[in-house]
Every structure is written in C-alpha cells, then in structure tokens.
Image (cartoon, rainbow, N blue to C red; front, side, top):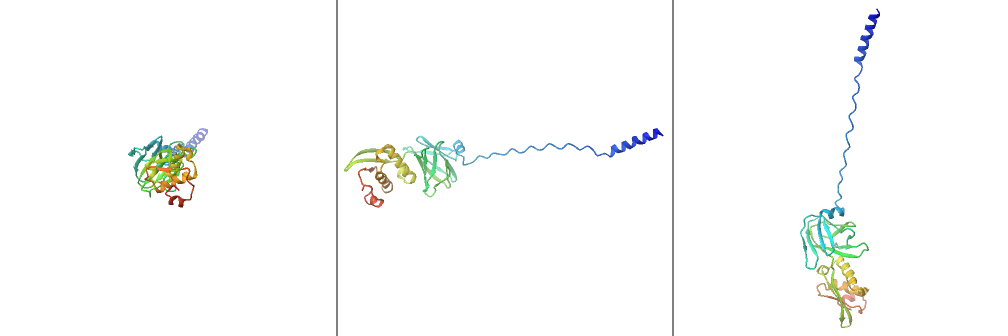
Length: 237
C-alpha cells in the first residue's frame, strides 16, 4: 500500500512538472541608440575659410564659399572674381564684414576702422548680412575687392594756399558707400591735417561729381558750404 501511494505521488509530481510553464527567456538587450549626425553650419566663417577660395588684396584676405574660383589681381592690387549665385563671403579672423545699404560691404578691424571694401557688378546684385563675419550674394555677379581706396594724398601749394592732391584707386572711383568710407579713412590716415568737415565735403563731392579726374584737389582754406553750393562751385567753393 505504501509503495503504491509513493508511486502515485511520484507520478503526480511528474505531471505537475510537465504542466508548469517554460521559464521565461531573457529579454534581448536594448538596441544601441543612434549617434546623432552633426551637420556643419554652412554660414560658419571657420568652415568657409577652410574650404573656400581666398581673395586677397594687400594684407587682407576674404574667403568665398565656392572652392576653385579663378581670382584675377589688378595692377593696383585689387582682386576680382566671377561667382555663381547663392555664395557666402567670410571676413578674415579678427575682422568683420558689414553689408551696407547700397549692397557694397566694408571690412573693419576691431575698433571699427575701415581696412578693405567689397563691391559687386552689376549693382543690383548686392551683398546682404548673415552674420558679423559673413555676407551673402544671392545672384551671380563679379566681386571686386580691395584694401586700397587712396593711392596717394600729397600736400602742395595751389592758387589760394595749401592743397591736398588725392589720387583715388580705380575701385574707389566706381563709387559706393564702401568706397566713400574707405576714401575718407585713408585720406585722414595719410594726411591727418585733412580731418575737417570742409575737406570731407570736398572729397565726397569729387567722388560723386568728378570720379574720372586724375587727382581730387582738396583745400583746407576753402569755406565749408552746403551740398548745393558745393556742387555749384564744382567741389571747390
């Protein structure tokens, strides 16, 4: 009897074991998360300088975002390049480039002083600001870049007294706000005594009204007059 009871108990145990659920399989390890892809900012001046085409005049080098451009250097040291539309232009490290309201641009140092200028041809294809170090050109155009707005400024004597003979560069003769800023900055740098309102007015009058004149003669002894009178007197009132 005891043997039979033991046998029944053993059989029952085997049945219960056979009916028990299989042990749960371990969960698969979580899939590794994807590493985010870092996309370079196309307007980052550092990236533009690393991959673009340098355009140099004197000691100043701009960089155009299109690699492999052909850059022509004029005898006066200015540089030209034909570019497609939708390009970026970066200033050198430590300098800024500012798009002006007429579509030209001025490159300035840390104190805000003019060091170079950039213009486009045709005039309708102006430069626009996209960052303190970068400007954009939306349409195909020719870039003209220079660090020289004034080739020389020499004091002499004229019929009424001292006269400053200013020889502008070809780039400055083409006019524009960048040229105007560069002309005055470099005249004062070359001839500090010229830093008067009357001399500045004479310079601006020559830039607008006599761009092709060989030299622009500015006289400190001439009166400071309004714009209409200045034009009437052909820039020398």
